[in-house]
Amino acid sequence: MKNIKKLTLLHSNDMHGDFLAEEVDEKLVGGVSMLSGYINQVRREEKNVIYAISGDMFRGSIIDSEFHGVSTIQIMNILGPDIVTLGNHEVDYGLAHLLFLEKCAEFPIINANMYITTNHKRLFAPCKVLEIDGMKILFIGILTELTLLECRKDPLIGTFVTLEDAADEIGRICNTYNSIDIDFTVLLTHIGFEEDKRLAAMLDPSWGVDVIIGGHSHTFITEPAEVNGIPIVQAGIGTDQIGRFDINVDMDNNCIDSYTWTPVPINSDNCPRDPAIEDVINSYKSQTDAKYNQILTRFVRELTHPTRIRETELGDLFADILKDAFGVDIFLMASGSVRVEKMGPVVTKGNFNTCFPYDDSAHLLYWTGAQLKTAIKHMLRDETLGGAHTEFYQLSHGLEVEYDQKTHSFLKFNFEGEPVADDRVFSIGLQQFHFNNMKDSFDLDIEEIEKYKKSRVIASSCKDVIEEKLSEGQHQDTAGTGRLIIHTV
Image (cartoon, rainbow, N blue to C red; front, top):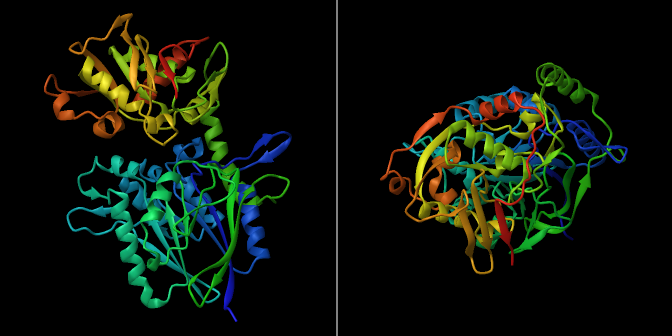
């Protein structure tokens, strides 16, 4: 007779400080109060429950940004995850601050990727064995390469670069723990859904990885993908839903006997509220409301940013502000800097902070027309237009690009109405992150670029510049079309 034990595995990813419920179709949706209520309800109803978070607890809300993640850690302490892995936004406030926040956390944070280059010592525990009802469950944390890009600013910090490296590290950890008879193994990753599938295909079945719970690509699914016999799941973004595995674990063979998985909506129809966690959130919210409810500006109408891989109204507005403020020919503003789909017509300081939560210095560079075309063509590669989580940029006024995906060619590449000559030199503005990762973002080498003229920092804060310019002008408007036309396959 099989020795079977039931495990209920709940999971979230990419919560991004989504603490507050919203009213949708006359019912409340999301927020950590009802999320906590649901988790607590499952913990009461089921015997063996584990709740895991697969990266990016931080960033995306005023409450998180204002208190640099300290508020998030306190709220997460009350929510009570059993295990958490790092996402790329966990390093947004700096590595030293992240190590401080880890000390504030009352739950384990794991990551097998980040280490000190001088002695190869890991910065975090790579894994954690949780024991419940006689089951030994091994969790391993694997991080996205975007965090590697951010950490390149610090030469003392390294990570494993490729999926192959990550797979090898998973094998070493699994082999090491085989001696203590692990019953079940979970990878908590933050590398994106497609990368999870690639990683699963690389894993040796003898390592015993049973499940991959991922994040980073904000993928909402209705059923798991299965690769190499491993179910791969993700729970979208924010707190509007939670993933739920109900797994029968074969204790004799240390594997899944059977399972069901479903995304559970977090709403007032099926989730009780948690008053204790609401009190903590409201204490932070009262402080941020007093600061961020002041009105910055009023647009002519609501401006939108419905996708990060097309020209948008908010993208045009912000790129133009930065171009004109810095006096550069072209400012390429990262689409991912804009974190809302719409804003306005009345814009408060809080609205703007939620819309543009990240801050970077601005860098001035000089590119030839040929280099500019290389950069834009790299941005428009099939991988990006197909929806992969890669970098994309909003073009400032004056630059007009028409691109045919089928032939991978430009039908138009003009600046101020004239075709761009390969040897013409342009002054280019970039945010710091994208300057630091020139090769990955634009397929350009900084050494080659700086042969003509050295780059330099021209402002310590892009966010401050946009906020100031918004406050100076009322009734702003923008078309959001015409600068970047893409003919897709």
